[in-house]
Length: 511
Image (cartoon, rainbow, N blue to C red; front, side):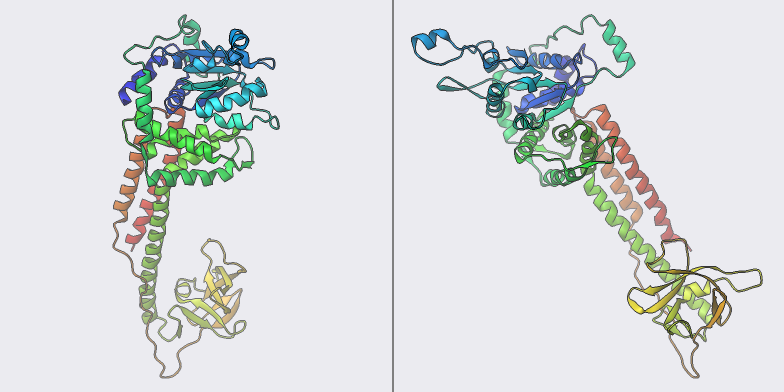
């Protein structure tokens, strides 16, 4: 199946330039039994997309029509049969060669259609049925391609019809100069393509495939990803703007999107939807073109959200181990220093020295900060420090040497130096409390356990998982080159984060 579809896409792309995504998504819509709307100015090959799709189906019929404010249902669905109305008193249309008998339909300037046409189209698109007189018939419609150079006007009752177009795409002029020049010189670019009969899809195959698509399953992993996207739609970045939109997607639309995902899996020879199928659905989610890029970024982020969660947890665990490792080293060095020079100073709560006569008498300094503080000399004017209330014991004030990190709430900056018996705070001297006569104390003990995890191996495994996900998405026939480039930029930043984490692991091995 996958190879046949790939060859089929190659055939219908012959002689048409930079419409690969429109054609592939139209084929996906056709096999899913859904519809697509192309937004763009005149002359960008929107109608050609529909004509190419007609050639995909064996003995396929097509119907094209340019809507206007004066279009009538007769022009779309066929004229009323005068003979049956006269002889049998039956209101019935002659539908041959009109929309109800077509496999592929192209309706240009769709929003100019009147209410009578729009209301009938709702049933045609959603149920693939048409009521002709007193008889309801099932129509062979496989794909409805609609086109317009504008969005539907709000307040004119077009919302229901707009919602029926599951895939929405902007169709633009040729961007690459080489393709533009090739199009100018290609005399066959306007001709209809002839798909080899062996590749064409028969009605029997189409029905068989449709039943097989119904049986494709959706994994729990994919459902979680869909829910991540759904939540993300509440905060969509709008291109070239500081705005953010809450994008509404109806439950019916989500149901049809899942049908597209199942069709994608089936066309890739799978019986279950995989994460690799998800990226193209951003074409189904926007309400305004300016939301497209923001939604694509949300979808790409969702594809790697499970790895982002694992990365965040791994980072937290590593930081915890680094803190524990540094704490143990600092405590051990502090013990060496205390035994060597500061054995007469009284230790409180294993970490602090107490300053006498400062503030309310409840001011403490980390013993490691004291040991590494600069000694007061004539040349040394002090180093930066902060005084702040202990968040766990508000009556206690803590003094720390300032390391350039964010200061605690309510902290006051000071200048610090020390000598053998106390410290200078902004030039004022305060003694450190010492042990009383005959008083003894235990030295601080290293606390906090460092895990024996192999962080390098875990980082490598996470990087491999990301790489495999990228490879699978890149193999999806419906992912465009622009989508791949956008995904690669996202993944590049994830790899940079992993590289920084590898560097942080080395901190566990510092002396």
